[in-house]
Amino acid sequence: MKHSPILPLAFSIFFLTLFLLVQARHHSHTKHKHSHSHKSSKHSSPARPSPPHNENNNNASGVLDVRTFGAIGDGKTDDTESFKMAWDTACQSESAVNAILVPQGFSFLIQSTIFTGPCQSVMVLKVDGTLMPPDGPESWPKNNSRHQWLVFYRINGMSMEGSGLIDGRGEKWWDLPCKPHKGPNGTTLPGPCDSPIAIRFFMSSNLTVQGLRVKNSPQFHFRFDGCKNVHIESIYITSPKLSPNTDGIHIENTNDVKIYNSVISNGDDCVSIGSGCNDVDIKNITCGPGHGISIGSLGNHNSRACVSNIMVRDSLIKVTENGVRIKTWQGGSGSVSGVTFNNIHMVSVRNPIIIDQFYCLTKDCTNKSSAVSVSNIVYTNIKGTYDIRSPPMRFSCSDSVPCTNLTLSEIELLPAQGDIVHDPFCWNAYGDLETLTIPPVSCLLEGTPQSVLDFDITRC
Image (cartoon, rainbow, N blue to C red; front, side, top):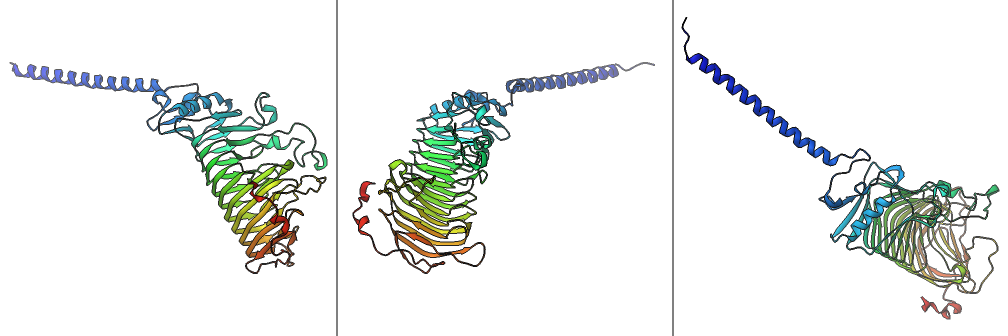
């Protein structure tokens, strides 16, 4: 049979086309594999958790991830140097805002460290993971300060924020025998007693702390010294009721402070206001357990103290040793004036309203003729229940420098247990009632004593 010449030609064209298609598909697949492999090698880092790649330790959003500087975040490795490098890089950058990221899901161990300014621009420390110090006095390096853990010094413009946790790991510090009630039979014994403040801002301005959880500081959780324009918003501070000296927020020589919408429970004052503070606004705080919200102590070691223009309002204080308190030592000088406590609800609080000008931590304090003056204090709309171990109101004022211009209105404090309403206590306290109070206050003196008219209050 004779074959047509067209048929072999058709078969040849078909096989040639099939071969070219297979080669083209193979070449395309090989190129894709090569490109993917190159990208992976750029990011791989088997020795530590792999951070996102960013040129010059900086990603497109201007955020510096501490892992980029070598931080491990396993809760065991010392990551102090990595944090220092991240801080120095951000601090020296001329970008408008420089953010350091502590990423979620990692726990970073940091030694006692001072982060120093001034910086070129606004700093942001975004804590979404966990920060922690060495675990207790035995783990604390002997050449490191035991007075403080994380210090921010001479910073103008900084925000500490995030959804993470700062864990002070204070349990072993609280058990030192020098701490109150920690020695045999509840005694306090001599010996090393320095314990670190968790977070301290020193000589800094334009500061924001927002959204953080802070727990179990060895001593104060936050301390602000010599600072200006401080805004604390929506933070949660917690430590056990019997943890000693664990004030939530302490301010000293610090002005223009706003503390809003926060929850604080600890073993000491929720907020304590020291000497040299003015223009402080505290609003919507839930405090307790603890020792309440305090101005002082002031005038220790015969020192001069000046505090003015303080507002505490719209807050809840529950199951605390004190409610709103002013405490001063005998022998001091200066003044506390222009203080308002407004719209505060008390729940089973011992000493809901207290001024104590005889503050003393031992039983051997001697009477002295000088004192920090307390005047122009307003209490309004303070209601709730009190612990019957102490009177609902206590105004214990200096013999030589009485309290003056105390104003009370809309006070309703009932016993948390039983039906007997206890009388307030007054000593050398002058003031007025703008409304009837529960319980009735009949012990305030009227007018202004001559000793106060002669007192040189202008020293502040």
